[in-house]
Length: 238
Picture 1 (tube, one colour):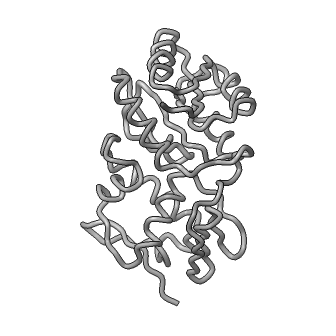
Picture 2 (picture 1 turned 90 degrees about the vertical axis):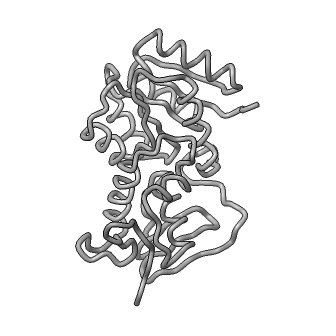
């Protein structure tokens, strides 16, 4: 049975109660709130392992809540929204969301997304500001960029780069498979999992955000290269 703690922020009482019942049935410990202000307070108090976040929250909307969470944590955030247009989806992913679910949804789909994101997320310590180190001890160096697999950290010119969980996982996967070209579908499968809805916009947005944080020039990338018509590869040359 699962034992991870989840925070559900949803202003619709019926949907909120349905999510709580279904997730608790599958072994999760769930805290539910109905507005963005409560979400931030309970996040600080409960230190959840994953956040399910409605976009249209009162007090502080989901985008605002996610921005505040990202200042202190890279815990997985799954947006829930009745809006499925590209602008909202891209905005949510660009500010640090890891995945999204659109309403109306099947609780089975929500459960699969939760499980997939938890399975691929780093194991966070209680401070939620960095990850407990995985078993590998590799530290990869690419010029000014250092990918520290031991401490689950990324540094550029010696300064730690604030990345979301999915951005870290994308960079780790690509950097450990240099000069190999991956399609967006393959990247989605490796980072988000087969259980998730294969929407390549998610990969494109995360790649774009990652590049903005580590590349000296978006026009002439040094690390993550676009292979036109195919996908992406990680390659670094001095």
